[in-house]
Length: 475
Image (tube, rainbow, N blue to C red; front, side):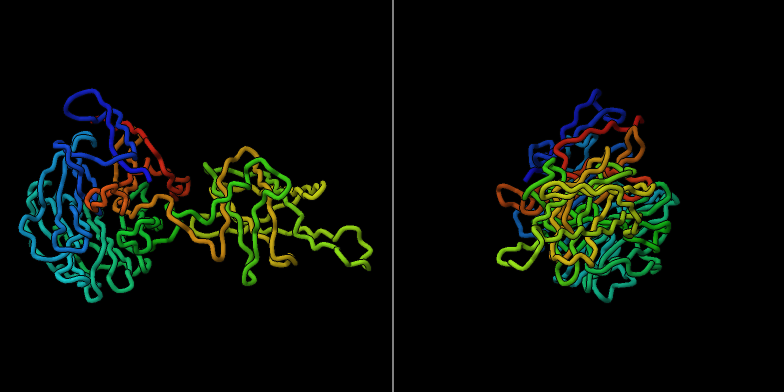
């Protein structure tokens, strides 16, 4: 498993704005005294040209004790971090998670929201304020009432819109129901205006806005899991409601199949697509870039024909080979849209068949190919798939095939980073169980390369990136 450190190369001694930073996902981050930065399940946010890293400090605990507390680090360059201290020096006894700080321009207050448990799992939200982003913060309410307080309050995220209206996306303890609620003008409580349940069994939501669209990223409950969580993307034109699920950017769609574009088009190197419980599995192709496919060739191995051994009355030298028919669809924003393709060529040679299809004019990032249920056999053997001038990754999907996380991290936050390209969005997650010394406070974190968006506003899947660079926006 690879982890995260931030290497930053810059010219100048005060600020890196206008300079290039390099992020390398291969080690821990350290503070100015050489100690590992121990902040988790929080956020990195910029206030007045300084970055602040807020999170829960776990130290050597298992994460379920009253020793958890909140810390903040500051940096001018995302490399050298200064430990600024604890946010709540005199916190009431309980178990603490998920600190998030936002700035209220109306009253010049920094507002800390946090999730805490006087007793596990009696979840509450607390709110504290300070005139400084580093605190200390004064608690003004340790039991903020929300629309869903009666079923317990869990993970959450905060978002401030362009009009300075703030929102909280949170899940409940019962059923982990995710919804978004509008905060009051001081950002210290709820207006009790809730947009309704967006999804269930979710946690760790992060909300942001891009090009007039509101995004909420969340996924199934992870709870310090080593395998990580996904990142389901919900998009709406309204900050409170109307969210549509557009895909999961941190889960493989199925089992990776390298044989389908390895150049071997004949023989027994093939992907078996099976029928299970009267349902065929499918092949999903994820394009490297948003593309317009024009034609596709599918090479099949014909070894699933029954043999004639002992059937002396059968006049046929070879059993009849029945061509499978395929159903095609492409991912259209939030659903699979069926498309009609034309079979333009059938080539038979030795024990293989090659089928060529012509596509209608579509723009896509994902194509799904599924055998028609009328096919009399329970399996199709696919040697190779070729699409002219398009590179892709192929996955076997369907019944019994898990969708595992791409990055083995539990989502913490999506950070907005102002660069020369505009606003970049960085997906962040905790790699639980990753510390070589077994100390939870030393578990590593992953920061993605800037998220890539398709023309319809959907987000391309994450990929593990060892290192990436970005040039920060000039001051």
